[in-house]
Length: 131
Image (tube, rainbow, N blue to C red; front, side):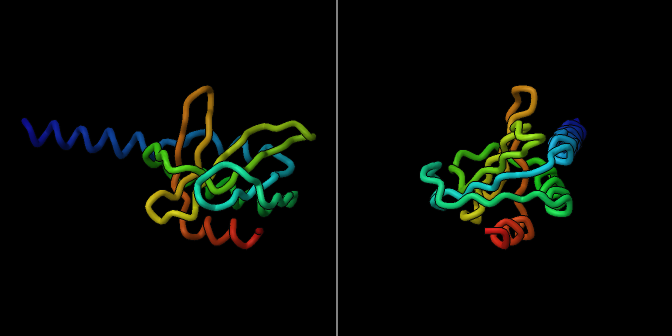
């Protein structure tokens, strides 16, 4: 009985982590994104650089990276943020942490619920390449 309970708990945990958050659809509806880079030590201030991306290919890459699978709710600060726009209106803000190997993630709100997803090494390389 204990094994069955443990097995069911693992199945529920794995399946809840793999459900899409819905962020990909929001990102794909955007026509541009402003990538703000912070100091890089986990603190929000100051913004040291902002890069605008408008091409569909980069927006699609970001959408895939952000919807890469849920992770735990980290509390280790941020290295930057992504502001997705459609016709000059902010659709969604996504914060990210990439300069701490133990705490690499994207963080965002959907319908008032906080989500954290994995920021992969490939996503980190992509974000660094646009800086």
